[in-house]
Image (cartoon, rainbow, N blue to C red; front, side, top):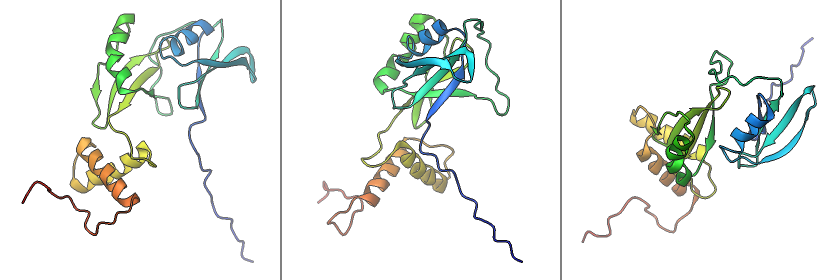
Length: 202
């Protein structure tokens, strides 16, 4: 008798719902997530799985949530969090270019040690530790995707161009060419020939 196996199927995700961190006391969490990073505290209740803990919910600005379990008996420890396999290396949050250009000055104002600006080709980054030793990254894209597309759409197209050209990493030329490719692929034109032209030549 033949046993018919059911097909294996994916559990398709549609975005990050929330990220939950283990915090120390409530004051430290609110002071960092809202007082430094500007994430409003939007919801608070006991941890439903551990009544000794509180559960804080912060809005990072994109409709998702960052939540923190707090306990007033937990001491703050600024030692770098583990980076072993299976551990979180860092959390990255998106900021505008206007805010990013102020990041060094505003971190310096508070005496927060940081990496300085890092050039990532397709974005700018700066790194620093939260009060519990978790590495935080502030990231700012150097491009806006065309209407109807996302940043990952552009990065996927730019990656393919980079690989085809044998380049080591994505840079702004790949982004610009990827954006042009996405626009040409998604938007029709009455022109038969959409190749680049020079209207200044006679």
